[in-house]
Amino acid sequence: GDSGSSGKTVLVTGAGQGIGNALVFKLVECKAKVIAVSRTQSRLDKLKASLPHVDIICCDLSDWDETKEKLAKVCENVDFLVNNAAYLKDMSLGDIDEHSIDQHFNLNIKAAINLIQLVGEGMRKRRSGSIVNVSSISAISAIDQQTVYASTKAAIDMVTKLGAKEWGKHNIRVNSVNPTVVWTEMGKAAWTNDQKRNEMLSKTPMGRFAEVHEVVFPIVFLLSDYASMINGVMLPVDGGFLAC
Ligand code: NDP
Image (cartoon, protein in one colour):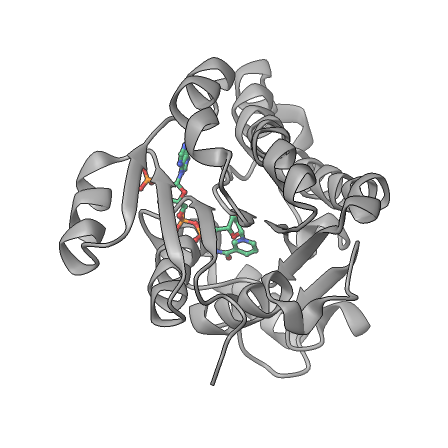
């Protein structure tokens, strides 16, 4: 049926692979007009070959100025924004270096705020908008080795809450999804260790990790008018992990 995305212009970051890539396919199926933003041109070219009506923009979102230069214009007409691109590198607290803090925060937080500002002006003018930030269970539960990554995810949840609070009056909703492990390139890289993986699975009532589409559907729902009174929430997509 109608997904509530038909005819809407949706900007998705990190659309080259993983969750963002699958989300683009779903949104196109829902008849949305999609702007796919990512860092690697070849992956965007492949996406464009499959979905010729998708607009692709190659941009290093961790660069504040490049992002403004390349995206300010298209952002004027964006109805829905999905801040999905993120950086993750596991590290023990004692091993954290300054550069890796910057890598995490420049993308996971600064780019998200940059984009929210860029789409916000048009959304306020039209008195309509929906933003979904792809956060993580790591924002809420202390997962080993994720001090920096988890800090950015906790921070993005606060961006969600304050965005919801400040812009609700403009009929702009801001929400997070907080997935457990998803078997993408990022998920595979972070969960190679069998013991760590099994421990995580044992703490998950459903006894498995999330499929990509199981994260995509809740994002599409939160974007849409079916979620028209949902604002400022962190929606776990975790098979019950956070409930325990
Ligand atoms: P992937 O690593 O599979 O894909 C991330 C995408 O983001 C890639 O297309 C990548 O581009 C793009 N990207 C990375 N850096 C930049 C940048 N500087 N500028 C523009 N684009 C960039 O990640 P997932 O699909 O797994 O993750 C998506 C979201 O889900 C993230 O926010 C992540 O934190 C969150 N999440 C993931 C979980 C998991 O287990 N996978 C669990 C919980 C949350 P390129 O093609 O160049 O690599």
